Length: 472
Ligand code: UDP
Image 1 (cartoon, rainbow, N blue to C red):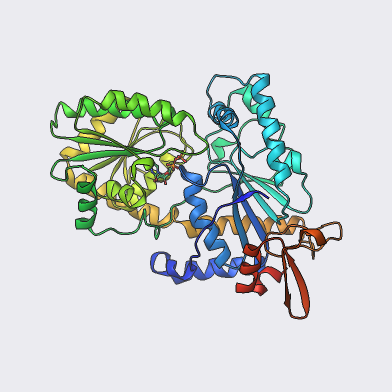
Image 2: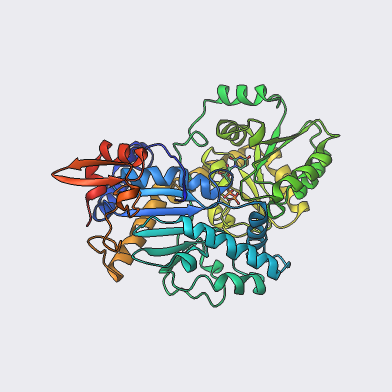
């Protein structure tokens, strides 16, 4: 079985205070016909990066809307994740091609993961290229497969793209953040555009009292007495952390006590992170006003929240960017952002709301200076940015879009009463076909016996049997 990522439960009604009752009711009503349907989101890492951030909030909400949603990850060794990072970079336009050995590594690992994928779902969302070949090796069976691409694939490296493209035939739908991102010759007919979103109620985004935010930064060694600018990002060349340092050095000539924080996370599927981290550390070692933090040294969601809330300016100097959740996160706190004009970032700014878009180190430095020099303008841009995020980039909107897509797919191909299992009964929770010798425990409900392959599934079933038995 694929590895499950455990998530907590979240009551959608808590969102009423943020999005209002009308929008919430719309979401609940739209999700109603999907109750009991089994949804899987598959990706490559349970932490680090925007996809895991979204899934950690979206999966509990889908469950609380009545669907049976799981988040699972594929596994792989360093060699595999080196290759998938190379594919990720290639799809974002990097020149390096894949050699035959790297392709073989990807295929062999995809096959291994597909073998571990024994469960059945009505909807399988494949997030990004790492698990893209699962469909090829597992076979479609009764599920609807949706390729959810979070990166900017508008100008992919043709050699890398032609390799990945071969695995996408047979998908029922593709989802991109922007129409511009659809790569040439995509072999999927149904294409929808759904921008990502942030969870306003997560520890990273909830309103932190100012005093508490200051204490948090003080505690990790950042002076709140001096101005601070921050970039929060995986350590990745596309996020251009060295460009941020270069821009900061220009600004420092005018604001000598300015501090820079580079807060970066390491992700399971991103082996490049350590190389970039070492480069940044050697750049910053001699300068006590440059702070470098990672999730591995205890800078987690609350600290990121404090950085985004207290910084005078948040920087996101990306060169390529799928969306950049960090931009919406900062704007939600009313903090203005100076960001690279890349991928999904301009979508979040609207017409100058929120901050300033830049195309070079020099422009980045000038924009930071402008916002430091003009606090009223900075505050006003931040306020308008928060309004825009509130209207367009909060997670209930993302769920609404996904629910609509699932309904569209059911209209095209209605749900079967019972997904095929070659006659073998299923564990109603994980969806595995369970032969007699695989039964770990059974339970009776409404006169019928159900088989489970683990105590975990058994417990989940007993907590709320009906939700696993409804089929529209
Ligand atoms: N993030 C974090 N700690 C870090 C760096 C990043 O929690 O040190 C989070 C960040 O707050 C955001 C996500 O990782 O929620 C990054 O998402 P984004 O879409 O900006 O970029 P991606 O990493 O997906 O390219």
